[in-house]
Image (tube, rainbow, N blue to C red; front, side):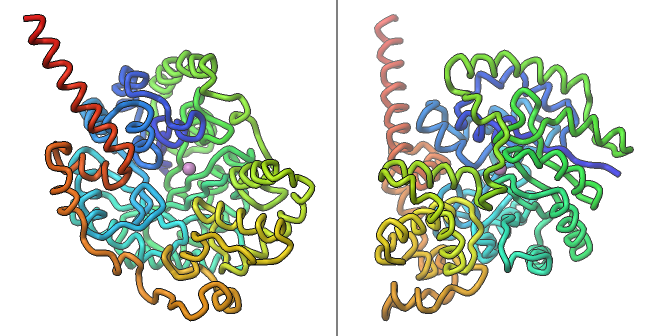
Amino acid sequence: MKVNFTETVLRDSNQSLIATRMPFEDFEPILGALDKAGYYSLECWGGATFDSCLRYLNEDPWERLRKIKAKVKNTRLQMLMRGQNILGYKHYADDVVRKFVRHSIENGIDILRIFDALNDFRNIEVAVDETLKCKGHAQGAICYTLSPIHNLENYAKLGKQLENMGVNSICIKDMAGIMSPKEAYDLVKTLKESVKLPVYLHTHSTTGLAPMTYLKAVEAGCDGIDTAISAFSGGTSQPSTETLNYSLIQFGYTTGLDEKALKTINDYFKPIKDKYIDMGLLDSFVLGTDTDALVYQVPGGMLSNLIAQLKQQNAMDKLDEVLKETPRVRKDLGYPPLVTPMSQMVGVQAATNVLLGERYKNVSKEVKAYLRGEYGKAPGEVDPELVKKVLGDEKQIAGRFADTLEPVFDCFKEQLKGLAKNDEDVLSYIAFPQIAEKFLQDREECAATKVTYTITKV
Ligand code: CO
């Protein structure tokens, strides 16, 4: 049996270990080798790459993608997309979502892994539809979380929904690295029995479970896993590509990977890693194993946010109480998966409830929007008392929030005349208005300076 490998060094590993600060020049020389190593796909775009390129690296994310595509001609390029949220946390109008998908594929993306933080698949439908129209591979992702309502039956239902939507494959997305080997085995088995599509698994090494989790998932019939070349593996990143390849081959699986090529890639990245450690960009803390998430049943990132918040308020003695309040808030909100931005919303609300000594005395505007239905439909039942208390007579949104949004792309295009050179620039602006505007302005000024310089020289 073949197990497909998706290499994450350019995206998730880069994001998880060094906040996506790897500039294009640092990986350009190795793209040829990455292309020849036999990966099923290279995850290289989406998530925080856009934000980081524009804000810190002075790179046009679209140009980065085209430059990767020019050197990676045989291996599929993959991106991560938050459905109707594209790359951020707010909902965009359908015309923007469609344009974004179309241009991503035109500029080089082959596989779009599309998810919604609440697993409300009405929020990925448009992105999936456009991907299929543009002849891309639409991978529907299910956010993995633990809760009384997130049982195997529920996941099988979600898998069926994705299959009916027409996706090409399914990914189980365990962003917190909390999926145990047994849970992976049972879940993959259930999904493989309920749908006819390939099933992929994405997890992180954070809690140390990941390599075992992948092995058991593969035993249950998982078609592909996400790994990172060893120099950039482990900790909050993915488990190492070479390790999983080595183990799976001994069990008789085919991986298609070339061990020599993997060594070349890893030898290339080793000094890059050392450089980031010297620069202080890579902190050894993120490379370790942290099992707190298993004890507290909340993702590591959420726990560190909670601790930071309590420290700031000089209320660390309330941590235990807040950790008890967290699952209660989550239940009241209908068990949203603890993924950004829900993890922050639930955490902040739990802390507020404890610190003020009264539950829901203060409710953040995000939680209010959530209760109105602006993020989508909660997986479980939201406490009706809470809805009444917070919303009063205000109406909840019955349908899909994006249905209330007017098309905006052409309007932005008109507004950005002169500054935006193409539709891609307009999309960068819509996704990250302030930083994209600054980036586009700096680009203009830089171009102007270059012209002056050339003229003076002549
Ligand atoms: Co991830």
